[in-house]
Image (cartoon, rainbow, N blue to C red; front, top):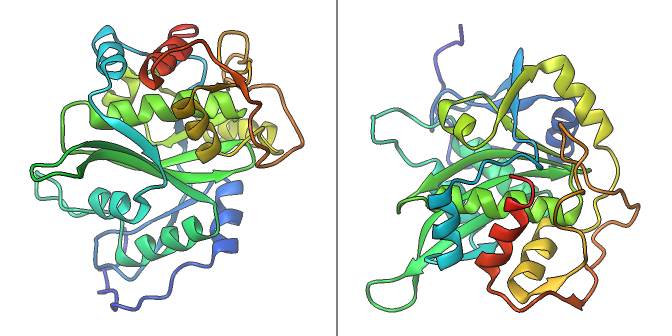
Length: 273
């Protein structure tokens, strides 16, 4: 049992970036008991959930939603806004585990290029756009650890997750960690495993991906193909792509068949879903 939460001061010191990355590489991540909690608890679950990158479950309704492009999808355009939305009070009155200190820590990770967000946008009521949903997580080696997601419109977080999976596959990532299993994640293809098995997959995913997540998202939006995304890229449970020692190397610039970004996402995912 945790001790009572201590209120976090407005200028709570972030967790050092190096310490956070060391913890993630050891299969451990931080949580707090409440938004204003100054304490950080280091979590190592007995059971871990992942979404195999070659087994994302794309329903027909979600595929139609993505192909019709109701949302404009971006990467790292609004990281601070996404984490703030994820930390907002839930409808059931529960408090967020994303404390102010944890929020500051992931903002620091993002500034160092180790944390990313995927955003879904809708037209605003008075021009411009409004943030309708999204997710954020931590990237290191060929691993992406999804931290949290939110929706302010139907299926917005699901669309963001589908884009994440397709982009990670394209970039050559091997492992998408979901931390804890939930019924919602199970409908999207998540599987549970002992922590020991997760640590094996974590070790197997060392090394640099072909490209970063932002590069992969940008390539999909621009219609730039590298012959990577599609059937045959995975290796079963982890969905690992072919390895490369080059980090943050731009994707090849051979043009993809003319299509919209949403249709390219659906095509990529239906080849293995």
